[in-house]
Image (cartoon, rainbow, N blue to C red):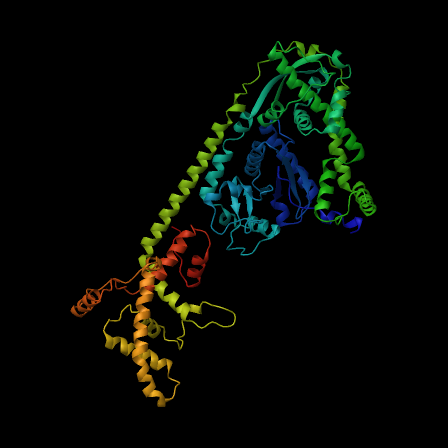
Length: 629
């Protein structure tokens, strides 16, 4: 591959911890308007509307942001990396619904690595046709409601332009999601923004004056500091051991107490990590555990600031941060290096091409700006005059209780119970619906006799070289093989229905032997008559021996048999004759073939437990749809 085709190999799968969103104005769907000016105006209006809602909320990794985009049509897009804090993702969803209410002439999409995760949240209320494959370009937020482009209008996957055009062309009412889905989403996002702010933990910490000064002016930078501490490696820890930027005077640096706000997930990341303080960092004695814990938390945050600052400064100069790492990883996954060993001549040549292409791309410029932005803010802030006096005279409240760290099991159990209730409610509604369908349509809808007839027709049908096929419309063409005659002959042959007198056996023998010897010459009649008695006796003996052997096994118990009729006087005499002759064998009643077919099919269908399987497939081909239960 040439360097010019490098970007075409990038894996398009979104990161697993990032939520993406797009805001499509109606004006660009209906006509080609001046996109730049309108997008800037819409962007400014959205920012003004949501700024009071967001307030001083601290995001886990990056704040809610918007930027202009042009494909497939001009719109405003954005993304938020929420990491381990799922509350950030749902706070974003809440903000998007609020935007759709304040700006009724926009359609909004939101998705993550799971796809349309709003459908996952409302999984128990989805229309039957809606699944991950059929939901592409169909799910939108508009005017505070969830909209789904109906399949009846677009049987195949619609393009984004077609879906947006359909929404703005007077068909919006057709796209309303089912009310149950709307209610489920309303319950979820109705907890915000209060739930997002309840998820914030306030901690009192002791930090160097430089760190306190930065946090006073840019409190959101604590997210990057905690990220730098939590994701540290050997190289970044070298910066923490020196603390050149935030602790230039070592243990002589002034230390102050401040109150820091952060998401609970972020606080847990700091508390659960064991980290030895650098030798240059001043730590109090352990005798006062409250002061010591405050300083330990401040030390972790300060080291995080140092590692983040130095690493981003270096990566910004080189232009190779996380964007470069993700770009390189996607090339490796796409096979661009074709299994070459790292360090080999061909590998180095391709890396040079990739590096050159990346440096000349707009992605390199944007990546460098993003990496340098926090560094620039920190340098500008620390250039301002500051003193410990600005912090010493303030009154600080105690840290929030962190017992929630060890009582999360209750919240998890409550969430599981809530999901369990949803499943039980879904199952109960489903059963009631099935029972109502059975009552309305009658029992005849599931005629078991018809199942047996369809199966027999399937067995009797002559198949082509392509294999067994279900006849269209279940119109079965009769074949030459007489099944009834064959079964009757076999039952007589096995003694299931025959009598025990000699004449009957001889007649049976005559019939069978005459069929077997039909090709012999008629001149052999005398010889055949001599053998009839011996063959008939053999048939009787073989039948008795076979029956006796089968009765000693469990084979007979695996089949259902026809109900026995009341014995006649003749059969009573025959039974007595059998007993008098010392034969203790019990007469076997004939198999009920139809009943066994239906029973085995239903047993197989039941064992599928509602999933796909051979029984449901076969019944479906024969035109039957049984209830799942």
